[in-house]
Length: 207
Image (cartoon, rainbow, N blue to C red; front, side, top):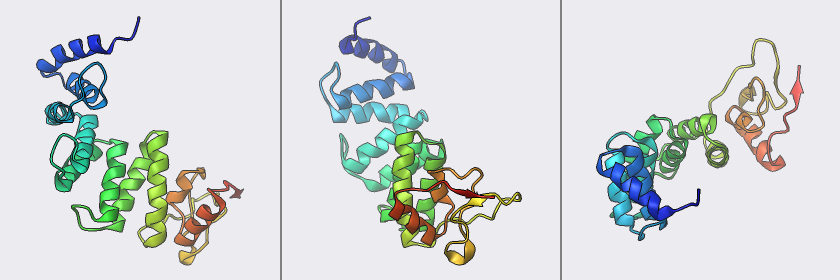
């Protein structure tokens, strides 16, 4: 079937007018991205709000982005945080990442490295590759500049990351198995610096 954005808009509009949240989300995205319809950030934001108020997590994130950047609405970081939080609490990895950034930078919330790390970790634990990588980059920065990193104990079988015991009184990694990406979540601050210097975790083990 030939792709036809205009026809897609027609059907999305019919469903959106009946209150279907996915259709409102998709139609809003098409207004925002100029696909099959005249670009209108204001109309995109209006449709996003309708879907977001129905609890659509992806749209709550999009509406947060709109408020954070002033796209189709007056820029309002406080409202952006509110919508990011709603989406983040439903498990949206992009919203978790952005909420972490807001805490890291102190935008519309009190600056809090610990809270930032919490949301970056949630995003890294379950997000798609793009969100995971972005969250871990933020996590690296936050972890090295603060003492907010969670510390784990060595697993009972003694299998541990090769950086276990580096810095922070031995509070190194304890991941089973030691993931190349997620090891960053469990290493002490000095271990974090090492990860950054070598361009990632070496994924070496010691029994």
